[in-house]
Image (cartoon, rainbow, N blue to C red; front, side, top):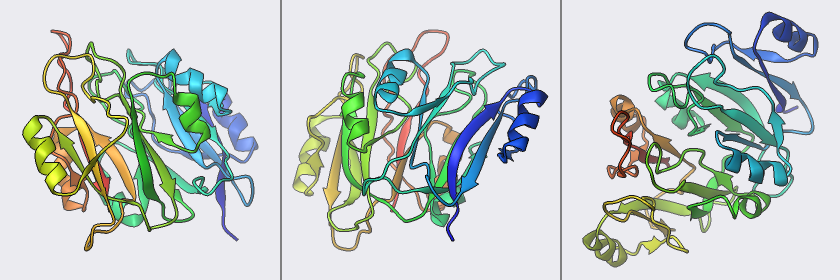
Length: 298
């Protein structure tokens, strides 16, 4: 009998941890607070029915609005407690459509587990230590079945969040305009268990020559086209895709990478990392915009 992840919670002290143990929750032994105290731990419960199929994160009020309106359950404890960073909250959902595949395993890493992609894991793009400027922590999930990318969208605001979430899209929870004065731009993708008709390759254009080359190569631009650098000075950045190209396997998952020191490790593990910096806008003088790269695994 398959075992699923059915509930999630967070503890901020020993009393909360002890209570979760009495409720049959299991602890992920990675303290999310790099300062040490209070100790912040993620917990999960397993069962044979009512599986969680979606996990999302919010670090702004506007991101939370769409999740709340579309029926996601919020874990009401800040994963970034004890730091000077952003307030990061976890949300989960139990869907039943074809695009909602149950989650069977869950782990947290300090951004050093690139090999997990080859073992069927998906890496959530939100840094659970977001805004601290010096540490990384990422959530990984494994599903009951392999999924592939059927469709993608880009948004430069949160007005359409509820609609996309209700249709089964997954938001990549990091803005491609992170730490800049530009708009909050997010990638979205719709998973499917069908290999046919799925995306097999992605490209990023930063100038007209790129656009012309990708068109000749048979790539299509995401519609409606949204500039990943919207609201910033500099080049316009667009995402392109190709479906069903002979010799190419369908894309199973995508992620955003900000720790440049580990990009080589991800590429060695079979992840295609596009070399164009998605976060090319202007950050504030004290904290320049962190380079951000799109990676995908076939």
